[in-house]
Length: 131
Image 1: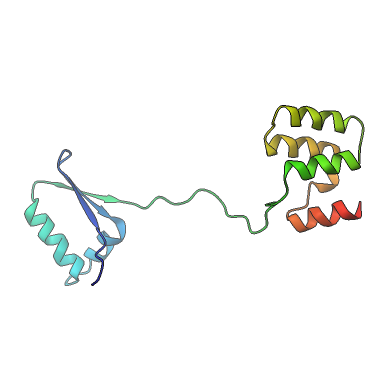
Image 2 (image 1 turned 90 degrees about the vertical axis):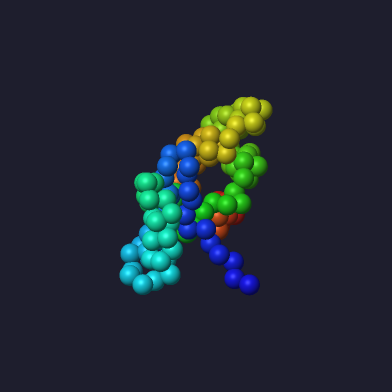
């Protein structure tokens, strides 16, 4: 048995038929099943307005390389082993305040700018082991 996808929704309060964009495109092809279904809707709800619902596009960019796996603990440990100035004190403050990863990373990059241009976890780990 085939599962039928709901391509439209009848909004009785607004007196509107909300159709998905893909369905509306297919309904524009004369003779198609969607065309016939759309015409039946228009006959049944002749005084209703037709509204085409567009699919929301993602605004976030997917990163091909991430720092997934680099944690605050990693940054704290690195700072403890490679102390510069008062870095350990700053990281202790972050640790005690349960600071976010972004806050800890920002402070880390201020003390260790050599990590700034690295994009992947592997690059970070390599530099941490070499340094």
